[in-house]
Length: 335
Ligand code: ADP
Ligand code: MG
Image 1 (cartoon, rainbow, N blue to C red):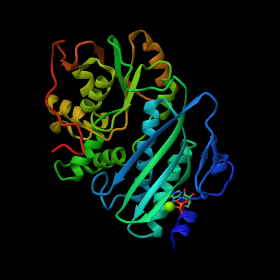
Image 2: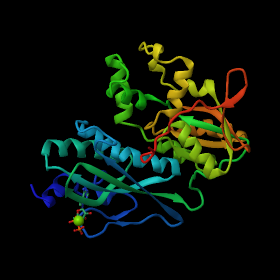
Image 3: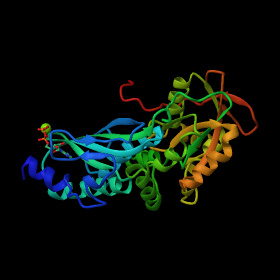
Image 4: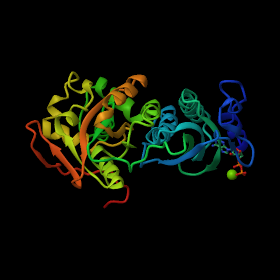
């Protein structure tokens, strides 16, 4: 199978209504020409984000290819969610060691299942032989002036997070042999590591309500830090509420011994790869935030507030404030 057969068979889809590139809103020309053409609606800004996944760095060599297809797009959709942008289209740059049909079939099925669920069309890319490596660039649209950024948090705002945190880190620790998980718990944690759910509907519902947002890829402590840095503010994190973000399945599954309060807190603060949304909104907008969560069927938790004192502090169950326990947030180039 040559390069062009491969593209045609696995990445170029017929223009069937509902499934094809030409049916997608905002796409004027898709795969097969020298460039794709996007047509964002008038008054819209184009939101653009790229994420690269490298074997050995972001996934294991034996990863389920369908899950890899899902995750490669999911992490990009998550960036659209954090921007409050509606996904339109994406490109896929792919380096493959060989053209393995079974692998490509599963990979493209995982990729397109998630793409179709979000009406996001594959409009182009590049394919080359080489060590397994993939990069997706995604394009979305957001009304000019309404994008959520990291920079809008203000003193007095509440700090909110969607879903549960720490599952992906749990799966990673187990797969690296650092901890042992019962099979059902490992399966649940792996599902969250390998098939994260991008919170696109929540991001859209938070337009005009949230003052800032970021998606959680590097760990809560680190990503809150990015948001505070961009906003020029500080924050107080409620220890008990943050701890409770560890998925509820963990304890029934017999994981309690892993998690005394201190370990549990550090786990939540350090855990990366969750792809939940962290966002701020004025305290006066609590009802609107709750309504956005309900409308998007996304669980959310209030875990702190923004204030003017620089840095991130922790408030314990007795209302005392103190420093965070030291946790390493993810950084590719940190030694
Ligand atoms: P060019 O030589 O102009 O760079 P290519 O020969 O690399 O174009 O690709 C041919 C067409 O196939 C282009 O429209 C390109 O966007 C598309 N394409 C290549 N690889 C992929 C891929 N992995 N997924 C989707 N489209 C792809
Ligand atoms: Mg090319």
